Length: 74
Image (cartoon, rainbow, N blue to C red):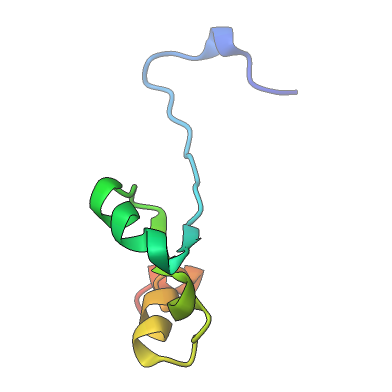
């Protein structure tokens, strides 16, 4: 059994899930990417050196936004 597209009407809705994407950009390109790129809501960008220092509190806070549990209020 499956969906028959002929049975669909204009009000049929399907939930679409997406994922977060983290781009680790080389330091020398980061400024240009930041200047010329408009990220989608699921895209995150970080410099290579920052990504390599995950113990930095600012980096940890940034990366925590990628965690699925951050989508829930506790």
